[in-house]
Amino acid sequence: MGAAIFASQSSSSIANRLSQALGTDLRIFDSKLFPDGDSYVRLTERPSSSEAILVNTLYPNQDKKIIETLLMCDALGRGGVKRIALVSPYLAYTRQDRVFLEGEAISTRAIGLALKSAGISRIFSVETHSHEAIEALEIQVTDVKATRPMVEAITKLPKQVKYIAAPDFKALRFADEVAKNLNLETFVFSKQRDRTTGEVSSELVKGHALNGEPVCIVDDMISTGGSIANASTKLKEMGAGPIFAVCVHALMVDGASAILRRSGVEEVWGSDTVENEFTRYSITDELVTAIHGS
Ligand code: R5P
View 1 (cartoon, rainbow, N blue to C red):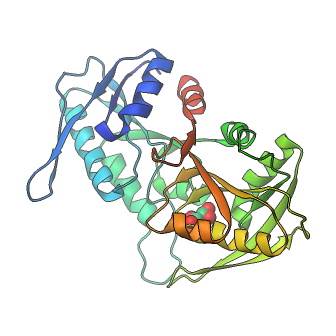
View 2 (view 1 turned 135 degrees about the vertical axis):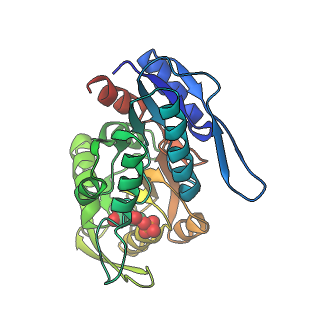
């Protein structure tokens, strides 16, 4: 894919890394908010090709970022672009990929329809929440895996970890792949989430007593920190030493840091799918390979 890259201002860092690696031009949209909060975007140069790669990671302020994405697609379409590939390293609204309680919306499907009708014909994202989410989007999705850079990040933690822990069954693939690469044992917890309150509780499914060994808990994302904090509390009760949390998308909503610290987590490391104070490793190479191969 040799199309030029267009990006929102908030995703300009990762877009810049992508454009350098892909050797393509980068154009950053002008954007602002009207006094009442409406979003505004402007493309200051007409696209030179009928294909475009649009980069926008959908966090924080995912609702605004989705509107901004739709507006950027409109501007690209007006500039003659016929095919848009969205590169959204973190794709919001992928957790409500089905109806859990009667009467709910399938948010993933609704967002997918909006993106599709704006002209997006394919999406590149990293560790998309689930297979069901990819189906619900109803757009061709390339789901980029983050295992390799995550493994590399874990080898750079301040302590050499002796065990890898999965806070729930969903994180088991990561945990097993990471543990295999590092030749370590995996501990597994099962997690129950109250669908109404969002509260989580965890039980140990696989693991044993510890004697001060460092442990790394891995997951695709950290939002409230509840899932990892529960696993960390249990690991401390089992005798774990320093605990680290390494995820792909460190959303880290208000209060997550404190919850994780109280549960014994010493450091949280996330990737550059969401750039913030927790960003400690990059998934750019994986995205570049996926885009190159498309
Ligand atoms: C759940 O399926 C995800 O993989 C994460 O475990 C979850 O979204 C993390 O959320 P929180 O940090 O709020 O527990």
